[in-house]
Length: 308
Image (cartoon, rainbow, N blue to C red; front, side, top):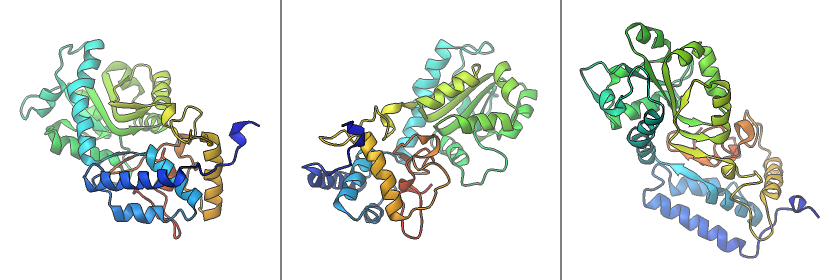
């Protein structure tokens, strides 16, 4: 029989695994590594899972979880300026300014850097979008001069004043669809072709990178961290659910059964997350919609682990 059709089953040492993962998560919270998450919230989320097999599935999801606290997010931002952008401009230097020093210029309080940081947000997006928050993190924790940060609708004004390098900041690049809509919304295609434009998500998925490189070949993309298919929980290449008797496909089938049993309504996207990426990657400040909705979807009968 094709192993992909096996039912999701509790392995022999499943209960031990459940306890180990629960203890590990509690330790990560207690030691501040998962800062912003509480043991109480973890406990409430785990109470959504009411059978031993459901508890084992939840433990597998927690085993896969990558959680970035605000401190870790700031560390990614520092890595962007210390390593990623210097590497990019060494390989592809701006023709207008081949020796640009990003960080020193953007911290400068007086001298025009000819660079602008632009959060990826549309004019009518709600204030809860992560773009403005990420901009505040750069300003407060990396001491970027706020004068060198502009909203996307101010880009043409900046060009008129002589700016020729733009750094678009974001926390997460999933499929690339949202950034393409952002480019279309502000009619940025010609600007990307004419000027030195860098899109710098802190985290990106390989699918999104390939999508943007194909559709916007003039765009420079500088992610700090990159995920591939191995991080999609139900992908054939997944790093998880490959125990003695289960596999990602049987886990995916069980996941859909779980949703039906719990009577969970549509989360507004595929139950594997937007783009069917099925990720377990969350920030303290927000959860990408490419993640499994059971991590962030809230109903009267389902408590989320993270805020969306």
